[in-house]
Figure 1 (cartoon, one colour):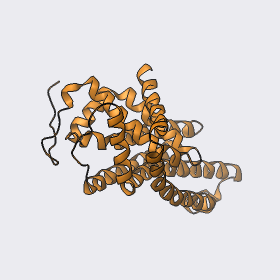
Figure 2 (cartoon, rainbow, N blue to C red; figure 1 turned 180 degrees about the horizontal axis):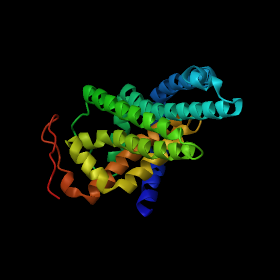
Figure 3 (cartoon, rainbow, N blue to C red; figure 1 turned 90 degrees about the vertical axis):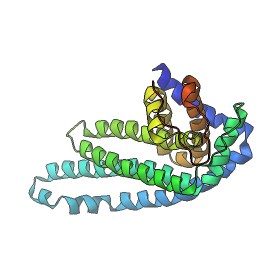
Figure 4 (cartoon, rainbow, N blue to C red; figure 1 turned 30 degrees about the horizontal axis):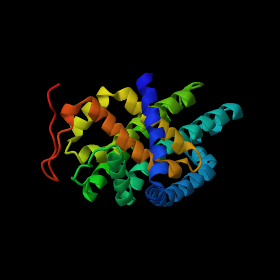
Length: 261
């Protein structure tokens, strides 16, 4: 639990960046606001069409007793909405980081500077950002589907689906947000995953806290710059605990391989 709480605290330290870099953090609100408005419109449209959608998906329940048909369709609608929320959180993160990459790169590099270390010279790159974003969305689709299926379990399905979705989505969000700081150091994806698994409770604490703030109205927009700043601190905290992984890149396209444990 101590490591989980430490991860949550790193998001709080990301919010504290507003005191030191208010102008820079304000820039980070713009892409989040644009993408957030589009996704909010989509969620409102889904919510409005949910009754008709669940009826169309469950024609076999028309012959059931009214009470059971209603209960079943409510469960289906809840599962669909929960899956949509999971997918929106993941997709929002990927799209916002892609659209606002120049702003968010300046934020995490400023955090590195404030922490007393020169930020890495290697650049993340647009196409790498696209590839990581697509990977994130693909994994998010899988989680959304599983969350929807779990939500159909009678009585406890809604609660289990929520816990499952928040936990795994939080991990994906933390993975995507820290990828810039790790990749700029020339760290290949397997190395990043290995390091994150060694500090999984801390990563989950940060990711779950970030994901929960995203679910608050307008929370995603307000949190995104702080999440980028906090993710830079999260990456540094893991590298400080494992200095052998923090080998500087020898060129903009170099990636460090896995070192023996």
